[in-house]
Image (cartoon, rainbow, N blue to C red; front, side):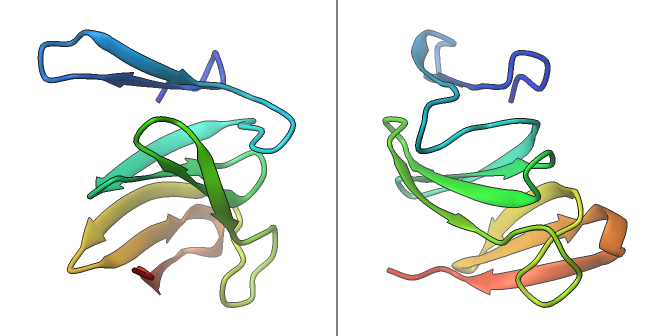
Length: 105
């Protein structure tokens, strides 16, 4: 995750550049903070938009989770992510909690 350049850089196991995921009209990244990968899915925490953006491994935007707020499914600076057992754990920084989402197949 490249916070300053507002993008995600995808490298292969030999550190060759595969893809740069940048802002576009349908998947703007304002402040990418962290990412997690499971299978062919990349989840990116976007602190500036208070959302989790979901992409395919080739960089295509799939969907987003959440919006700004303090209810379930809402975030206030999502700062960290991890997949475990098909669940996405999100550190919801300024709401001082961890939210858990089940991965849809």
